[in-house]
Image (cartoon, rainbow, N blue to C red):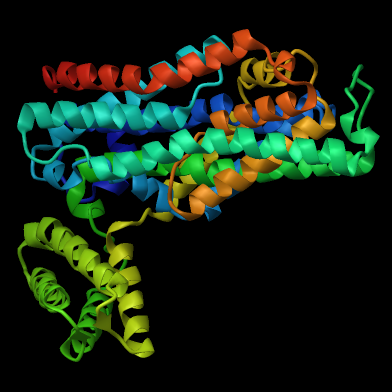
Length: 472
């Protein structure tokens, strides 16, 4: 068994030595994150295909691979902003200073708590948010880490930002879908849009079919670009926890390029002017942070090259961003462009994911989409409203979901595809027939899962961290 694990992990480990037990845990974590994204595929992506299947726009045998393909492309082309956003919840800098076994406890706690809750809600057919689950698990494991080791804990500012995104997005989905449905009913008035398919052969007209397939494609792609990135973030968490020297900093960016960027920034700072003391202090602070970053870059000490360098990069990047936002610091356009480029260069050193990481998550999500989708599809298609989904309801809810998820991804904020789409369908049902058109039992179950997910995931991950700490 050890020989097999060594063959799998050797390309990642390089010259890094892990004990036999940690090597096994490392392999388990890699399999677990692939499993999480696989579960995410059939748990969350079912939302994207529910409308095309229940409006007979596509048969499941075509809809599932189609959605899986665009989920794959969404992860592959969507960047890493959301992935890095969720990683900022965790005390990574503190974690890297401690033995690898501590990182292993955190990774396992986050992964197992997320998978258990996702599988449980999937089995019950409840559209539950993988985003809520993952973020709750990260918060719970971070609280346990802080309680046990002290030091920095949850990044509560980031947690509030993400929490606000998760709370507002379903409300936006509900309101926007209801408004769009109202527009279709009272302004567009195209009767064919409001037809409810009654048999397997009762398929929509070609234009409506194309509309529904397009909205399904958009939701699938943006689901990949948002939810798929959470898997990228999880895999990077594993790599940073077990192999910080290799993955805490992007070694693909050359030292010469980084040094040149820092030198250009120093030149800008040398003639930057500020109108008050706060601005002058910020300029001096940034100049000092740049000097410390250059010193860490030039150091021959491996720890300085990784931990100190990462810390200084983040400090310098934060200061450069603050200078760009400061109203009292005068910058000519060329200097502003230089600082903007520096900010991007410094960010690329810490906010990155190797192409094989993105490919692994893309494939896992795409394959997961093709398995186990039916339970959630039945809830979305049949049980949110008291009548079968019509074409207009399917198209309006998916169009709003795609727009909301895509916009959130552009800001690097995770949202719940499940709650955005299910609330969109509820909004379209409400606009069609009032409150009496909604299935109160299903909505109560979804709301209950929405309320319980965060606290359950937090408690579960907290307890799992302490449990694993006894054995690893």
